[in-house]
Length: 393
Ligand SMILES: Cc1ncc(COP(=O)(O)O)c(C=O)c1O
Image (cartoon, rainbow, N blue to C red; front, side, top):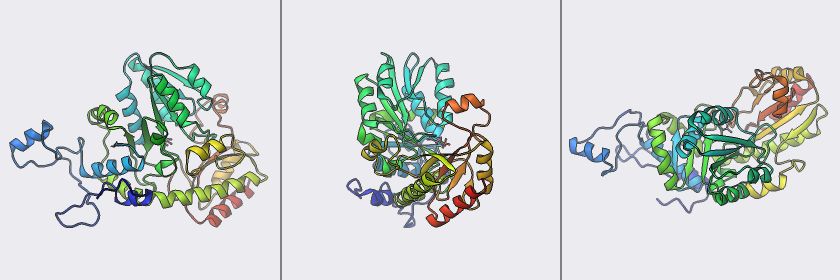
């Protein structure tokens, strides 16, 4: 069935679907196998030589990952996709696959922690030059382009201040310099933002988050043109960052409801952001859907919604953050994001506790900053839980 002309939810349900004829299974079975049998030696030879289509060994390809890759490619409006064992595997595979010794990467200074570490500490070990800039100001990006710049790398919106970067203009700068724009689209998902339509060359995801959506799988996604994906694929196969058939199957299941989940995440998050914005115990709320957010207009032009992630600062100390964490009842105290249930964390006492205070504050993580991934529970229950927890501070 040609699903390319379908609307988002129909694509999310039908694109890539493999009709397994062996038992007439309605849902694609889990091809939980490490290897695939050949009819004879000649067939094995042809498959290895790429002269016959078919599977060989799950690290090199499996029906569950094929199906999923086709679905995510269609949802992101790209030509091809790859499924990886984690979001970090997607990011590292893209960067190692594209960059060569002597190349330069220009990255936003606001990135997921492990991405920042990979770029700042590991890429230089392979002879790759690295510059971080505040990419919200495109002049910084333009001014730091070098003749050897091969990638501009951004995440938008980005933690902790939910800073929004102009994807279209970043792509124009990259292309004028002969470089590629790579966008981490984890926070928005293709339901809300499709960077390839805005000129980006490659999109990466931590599928662990909204794509899976239920907090039960760790995986990643890469989407781009056939040419770029063909170039990157051998790095995935040879570094071995492929995902398991069962995880791919769980992602398939999660993706089918991505649209309806994201709609509710967005609706709930806006109500929570407005509630917190007026709350006397809150100093500042960072959410692109608030008119006070500096890139409210840009968010509206490049995305179809504002997402489910909110950061906020309490009027208080590090202790206030700890008290809030210990007072929530329905909202789960955990890192990660994008699950059906609301997740809350306090970076100063948890994820960033090991970073010297001054350095942490300089990177925008204040003592009382809280990150909330707003779930799809009933909004009344989310507000009631926040309200009783804030009363304890
Ligand atoms: C924006 C973003 N990108 C990438 C990652 C890494 O993903 P994973 O944990 O699936 O490797 C994360 C994880 O939290 C993230 O938030």
